Image 1 (cartoon, rainbow, N blue to C red):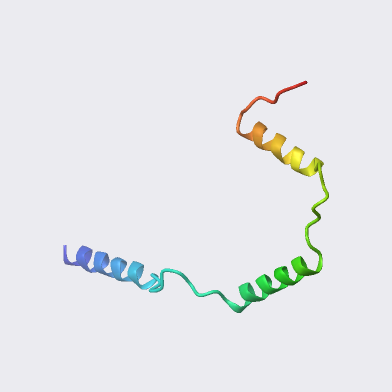
Image 2 (cartoon, rainbow, N blue to C red):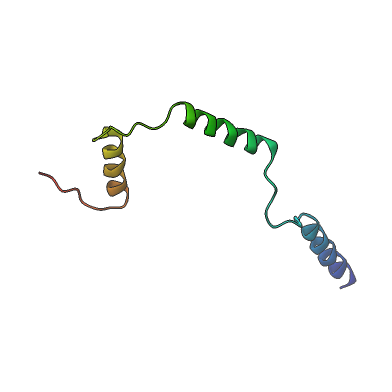
Length: 75
């Protein structure tokens, strides 16, 4: 009985030692650098606004319908 109690206590302490005190981790420098690069690229080459139809977007919508089990409207 004593051995089981010691084992249980040791397991509890082991599990508690892996917990992180902070709920939300602070962003690392890599994350900040990636955000800065993305912002810089977006400013240098903005998204085009003159596109009326996108085949890629159409294909993504078709796939979403297919994956979700919805029927396509055939015309």
